[in-house]
Image (cartoon, rainbow, N blue to C red; front, side, top):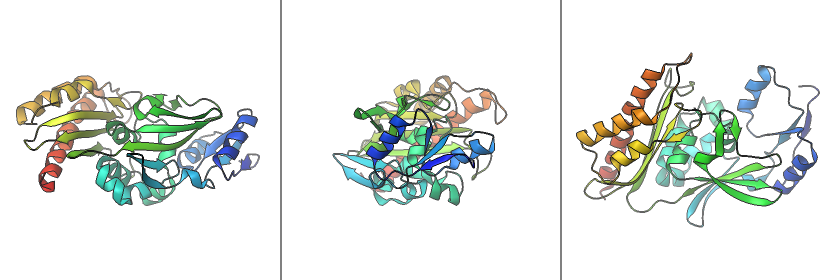
Length: 290
C-alpha cells in the first residue's frame, strides 16, 4: 500500500474529473471495509479516491416524494434514522444486523451497493422497496433500479468514470410496510446465507397488494421472487396462502452449494424467512390499527 496514490476531492465534480483523467487508476473509497479485505488478500489499487470529503454525498432526507439516502450514509445512520425506521422498516432492520458496530459506523450504503455482493444486507430491502440508485457521471446523473444495478458478484452496470451518489426509496402510501429477515452462521458478524425482504400494502381485511419479495444470497445477484409475489398478491396470507407462497419461493431461488451452506437448505430457508417476513407485515399492520 505504500506506493498507492491518494486524493480527497471536495465535490462530486472534482471526483468525476479525477476519474476521467485517471486512466482507471483511481478506486473510489468511503468506509473501506470491503476494500481492506481485498487488500489483505493481495489487491493493490493504483490510487485511492477518498469520497468522505464530499458533503453532497451525505445525508438522509425526504425529497420529491422519496427518501434520498446519500451514498456516504453509514449503516449505523440508516439504522437509527427516524424516517427510515418509519417509512422503510426493512432497510432499517437490515442496517441493524450488518457486521459489527465498527463496520456499521464505517461502512456505507453506497459501498454496499457498489460491492455487488449477492449476500449484501441492504440490497434486498432496497429492491423490495422499489428503490432506484442515483449514478453521477461525466454526462450527468442517471437512475438505475436497485435490482438492476448488479450484473453478477462484484460487477455492476457502472461504467468507468461513474459514482453512486444516492439511493432513492419511494415514500410509501397508507398501509404500506416492509420487513427483512436473514440467516447466517450466527446472529452477528456473519455473512448472510439467505435473506428475504418483503414489501406490501396491507389492507383493512388483511389482504396484500403491490407485493415485492427480494431474495439475497441465493443467486448471482439479489433477485425478485416473482412466483412468490404472485402467490401473495391480492390475498390474505392465511396458512394455505402462505404454504403456496413458500412452495413458490423455493422455485424462485437459484442457490448453489458452497462452503457456507447447501442448495437444499437455502431453498427451504427462503420459505421459512418468507413466512416470517410476511407474518411481520401482518403484525405491524395490526399494531398500527389501520
